[in-house]
Length: 145
Image 1 (cartoon, helix red, strand yellow):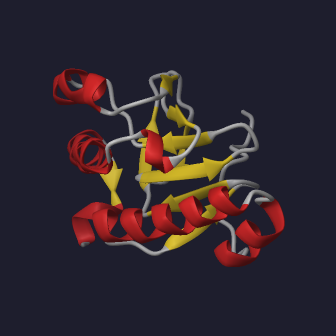
Image 2 (image 1 turned 45 degrees about the vertical axis):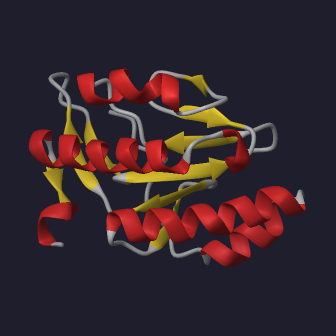
């Protein structure tokens, strides 16, 4: 079975941002997301894989037998837009998604160009409800917090 590439690393998050993010607004938004997600999750930021800044962790296991660990919430400051890992397909989030602002959505993440395009209060609700969902359905580091 293939090994998961997205694992927690010891790379400094500020060093990653300073070397990876070229746009000053995206850097400022990255540091703001770190501040917000640290407060919402209760965890310090860690670099996962090569470009995901994650907070806390949970363990998943699929029926296929594939299993691994992922951050409870996180983001990646990709060149075109931020990938925000705060989304769970649960009714609570479906109801508030239209209030988020300017975004696109993928299977497991929300894409935004800049933080000023979205409602931070709605993002907080999505992030904290995702942690609650993960705590209920997976082995979760959030139980220790």
